[in-house]
Length: 223
Ligand SMILES: Cc1ncc(COP(=O)(O)O)c(C=O)c1O
Image (cartoon, rainbow, N blue to C red; front, top):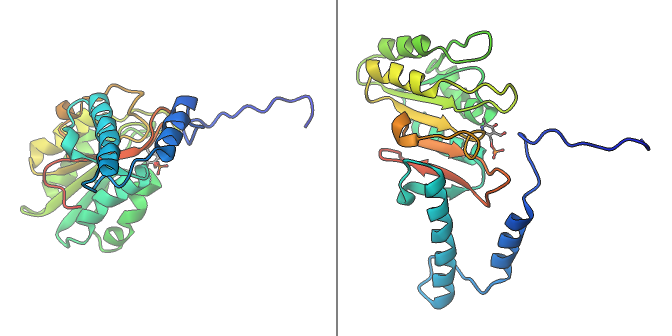
């Protein structure tokens, strides 16, 4: 179509990496760095690069301990890893809203079939209702594992979820609820204090300014 300039307007789905990101990746790939688990000099150099990345990411994610950071391929793998660690426990019930990303909903197909998934109510804008989360947590049998998965922000509707309100509502009912925060669309855009939000694990995609995706595995995560 001559005469038209094509504009790419889906930057929440993906964006080309920044030139400095490409430079950083290429520099490491061309370097003599070895396997970061190896004891020799080349391994030590690779380890230095990984640890420097870990430092930068822990600065970005307030409240996350650097040693809890696990590098994964993207937000999908981060969410899948956390949910898979709970899914096969027959006593686990999952609290999720229908507006969650497929990387949260698809791994829960089996618990859904088995009646171990509770849908959280959302308002007309797609915001999760904290009272609905609290109701489901209250009704879960004592001793049963409860896993709440909630996204920080929705990349299609732009809705920022009331994460702090939902998490405190469920924790008032059950202080042992496990919380997965899907922060794929939020990190680097919204200031998130993860310590204040009291979440247990965080999945995060790779925005344009990062090389890798990370998963914060806090205490109690069996991955
Ligand atoms: C809210 C949310 N969670 C998870 C993902 C999956 O992330 P990735 O594409 O890095 O696998 C996305 C991707 O758009 C997302 O918007």
